[in-house]
Image 1 (tube, rainbow, N blue to C red):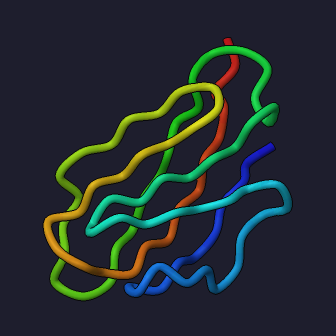
Image 2 (cartoon, rainbow, N blue to C red):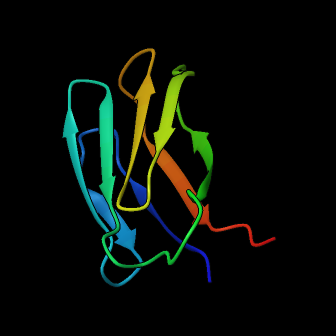
Length: 83
């Protein structure tokens, strides 16, 4: 089942799936999703607002980290793809 949310450019969550948390340091967003995916790393789908672009995405079972080129809002969906 996919999870996701929308976060404002200042790091304030507009909405998040239950159990999903986010922190922001500079232009790096860290989404924590412990115990939400059973196996295989989840695949994040990211859209940004403003003039920012995605420069890096890293995802593990428990955390997804998205780095933007500058401050911007972010919409994210994270889903596990099964074999």
